[in-house]
Length: 103
Image 1 (cartoon, rainbow, N blue to C red):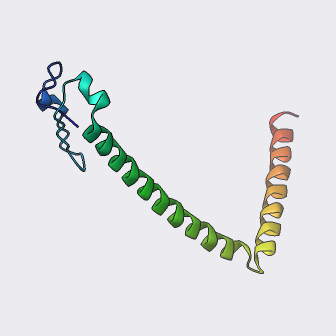
Image 2: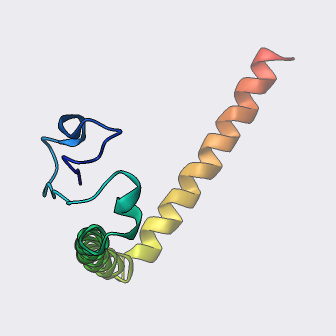
């Protein structure tokens, strides 16, 4: 958002080439705080962010559902038991290595 009649900030410094939308407001620097078009531009931007956030949340929710399908499989218990076994082996190896390193 920028104003050519800002009076404090050079309007060219406010142009963001990577912005989705660049909005020119006809207001002074302080007048932007009470400018209806400025508030409308901010509201549009916030609505766009909210829509993007909802889309991301829906996508992530689908990922969680897919993950739950894998976790709910019958062999999930076997996989967990296998991990527990590997942890026990790792602890035993650590104890043995500790005994060797520190007799």
